[in-house]
Length: 162
Image 1 (cartoon, rainbow, N blue to C red):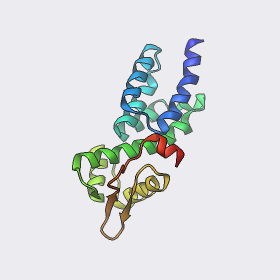
Image 2 (cartoon, rainbow, N blue to C red):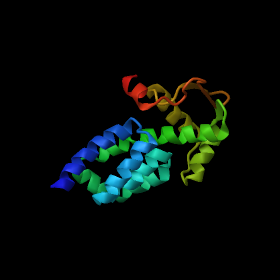
Image 3 (tube, rainbow, N blue to C red):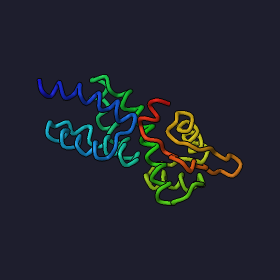
Image 4 (cartoon, one colour):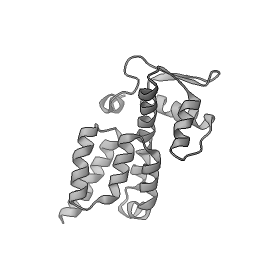
């Protein structure tokens, strides 16, 4: 019965992950997941936290039937948006630039083993900007993402209110 209650509690965690929890909060959930043998969520939490789309997609695919039976698959699929956001944030931090060439972003996808073209990168970024996960604009002609100098990757509370 305790495990069932934790599963329902973890559904709420998934909602919070959708709005991007901080790494210290995620670390506490790792311990809870391990303690109650909810190991199927560990790769998802790790993927979202680090922006590792390969880990996230592999975890989602591996336990797809289980998540569908529990009725949480679609919610988890939506968490991929946060995973994209965190990947772009990592690229931004590594390059330390306010202007990111889209080919650098596409290279990060290739590094994760995902073949993606520049148009698809631009589409993903446009959706993130529209939803408020990224502040900035895309220069289509130059194929560059220009990030806002003030808080280009807003925290969850701002995104949730926006």
